[in-house]
Length: 113
Length: 116
Image 1: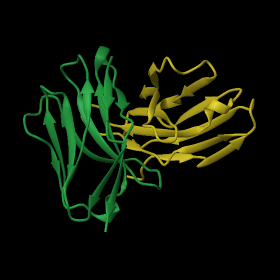
Image 2: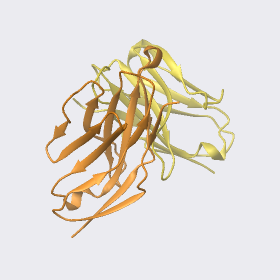
Image 3: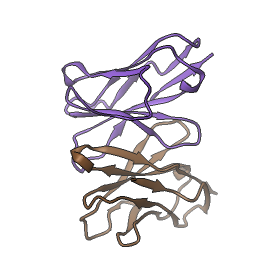
């Protein structure tokens, strides 16, 4: 069990640029989740996958956000035309589902200049 | 709408004492799961304990126990014999199962400071 891996750990970019983050879940986990966390808040659900299928996407998520999980393994989260309000920690988690807990990665911290 | 409420933004506890972190939830689901996570200043989210809505006994994991009161919709975390390393943010979370999806909702967290 090597844990959930996210990269990059930090991303600094100018407003208007596109960014992509990667998450490698624990290998046998079929569920993968993306969250956004801002300072002093709990993680906010963005989207989740069961295997390669994206089963739910938050209504708070604008069309600038897209996520994929090709072949049901790693996942990418892309933000297009970044805005100041996108600055946050983006967390990925995976689980076996059911009563099993989510295991989180260390997150990618996005800073928009 | 499903919701998690943590009313204590910050708590202090003396080392070796016990502390209770409050969590109330709102759901119309009959089947749901409740989780507690710890987030140290380093940022990683660490799973602590789980309680299922149909579990009759309160969950325990080492120094952590969950005081589950279903009728009151509360799932308080009790940490016994606090240690300095327990200083962190603590989040209560609920897994929704509405419509067969497995979405998690987190509270705003409680920052715990253990005093030497």
